Image (tube, rainbow, N blue to C red; front, side):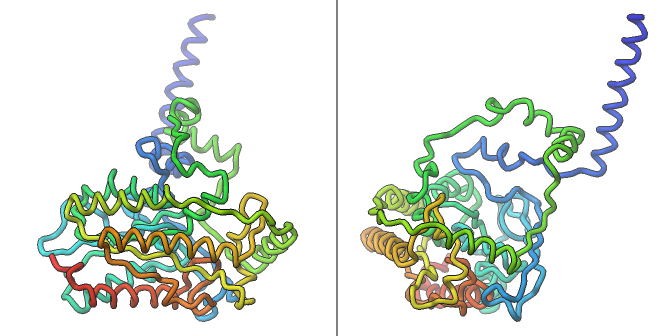
Length: 371
């Protein structure tokens, strides 16, 4: 009897191994890939390497009536936007620019090549015979603290010539919520959740996970029905009466650190302060403001607009003190549906204008793009 049990266990083990080998020819993504990557860093990547997302968009989204209704978002070997691999070495004579920021740099609802860093690269290479490489490293939800960690842990080793940092909104957002702005709650996910992290290293484990949890396709639908539900939920919240006074010094210290790193390593830097559509005179955009909801509290757009302006002012002062070129995008991008489709994310026209603004700024400050 004991021998029969041993034989059956051996057959079961061999069968499981054979099935796992077979399934590896038809792999499915690891549901915890981003968490496993983030163990190595003090920031969590927004998108894992070599991923493909599809967005389906209705005409009702501001600025999208003449745009594509299905867009594709791809990441390369480092999780950066685009299909071109990012390697440590770069071709001779190439000037490498990294666009660093949150989702307003990432531009995930734009089709490939329509995000402002890609459009900027196209303009630069048209005028300069293909000598520029502009890499979009935007990560949704990242603040100045995350930008600093991304720069010092990864980007400085990739032969950068210039960093373009576009930041601000996520710092305001995190200060208004209970998110861990100071990065003090660093966990070792493999120790906290060893069983499921180990199990999902295998294709069988991943399929069991999706069987129990449900499989989420790499598709995101932006529909008027979903936005209407979100708006109704948002408007039902009582407005927050305790207006916050935020201390941006931590965010400004992170900006100072970014500047210090660049100056010590002779890496050129330009800073763009955040543009938003929180303008009380634009009733059309009010219907698409979702970031006014902060963990069950609804803030008036005018309050958020003031807080964003306060942070922009602080960033401008730091750049002036440390002699870093900057421009305030809010001064150039009107807070309307001509440029935005929600609180701060740019539609196609807005991305084109942003690319042109950065291009013009680089032409006027040509030392930034000279080897």
